[in-house]
Amino acid sequence: AFLDRLRKTGKINSIVEEPTSWGIPIESLPKTYKDRVIVAGDAAGLAKPTTGGGIYYSLLSGEIAASVIGDAIIEDDLSAGRLICYQNQWQKVFSDELKLGRATRQVFECLDDRQLERLLETLCSTEISREVISSEAFAFDWHSKLILKAVGHKGLISFLRSFGPVVTPFLSKIVRSVER
Image 1 (tube, rainbow, N blue to C red):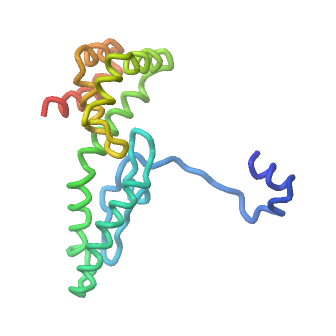
Image 2: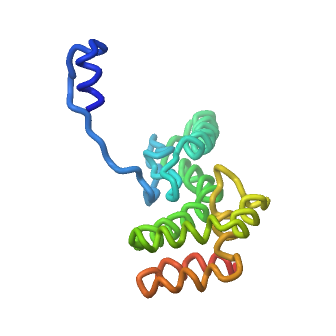
C-alpha cells in the first residue's frame, strides 16, 4: 500500500524488485566468526529479544568487532583462532541479557490476548509501575535488570504461575535468573 501510494503521487516511477521481509532475529548465531569474517549486529542475531531493537547492540558489537579486527590486522592474523575473541567479548556483554530477554519473550508468546491484557494491567498498576520505573534497574537499552525487578516484585511470580503449565518452562529460566 505504501509503494502504491508513492507511485500514485509520482514519488516513484517503478519498483525495480519487489520488497521482501523477514523476522527480526531473536537468537544469536552459534558462531559469529570464522577465518577473515566477523558477523555483528542483528546479522549476528544481536537484537533485543523483548522489542526487536537492534541499533544499540549493533553499535556495541560493531565497536567490539572493530577493536578485534584492528588488533588482528596489526598482528597479521585474521584466522578464526584469533577472531574467536570477538565472540568471547560480545558474549561477556550480551549473553545474559539475550538469554533472559528470550525467556521473557517466550513467556509473552505463549500467552493468549486475555492473559497478556491481565499481565499488562498488573504491570501497569500504579504500585508496580512506580516502583519498577523509578528504580535504578530502568534502562532503555538493557532490559534484564528491569525484567528481574518486575518479576521480583511481590506477588508477580505467583501471578505469572497462575497462567498454568504453558509458561512454566520459560518462567523457570527467569526465576533462576532472579535467584542468582
